[in-house]
View (cartoon, helix red, strand yellow):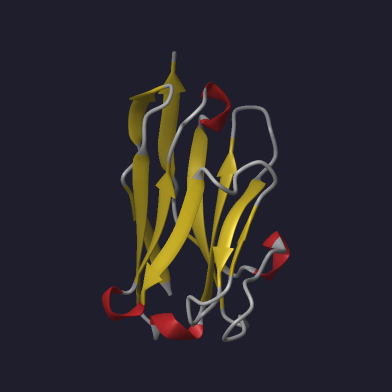
Amino acid sequence: VQLVESGGGSVQVGGSLTLSCVASGRTFSNYGMGWFRQAPGKEHEFVAAISRSGGGTYYGDSLKGRFIISRDNAKNTVYLQMNALKPEDTAVYYCAADARGTYNSPTIAMNQYSYWGQGTQVTVSS
């Protein structure tokens, strides 16, 4: 499966952005989906995950309540709505797909994701 992210950009503190990730090549609903991010000089960080059905979601520490992950299987797209953005949210955001994802449980472990997009930059400035 091929993944292409979009929607990144520059935003001021407190602003919002919605990232999109479009999948192609395989049946999208067969994949658990996740978002990760990498800030300069830091390792990849788990952001959010959603199950194949969309009924199960999970968020990284401190992100729940500000970020919302969703998916539209008819459009082969997973979204990440980001609200109340902070400078520490600045990073390259990647979407990823887990071919072994279950129907209702989101995949949290990064090493279970087999497919990755190229990333989209999000910059939050004060």
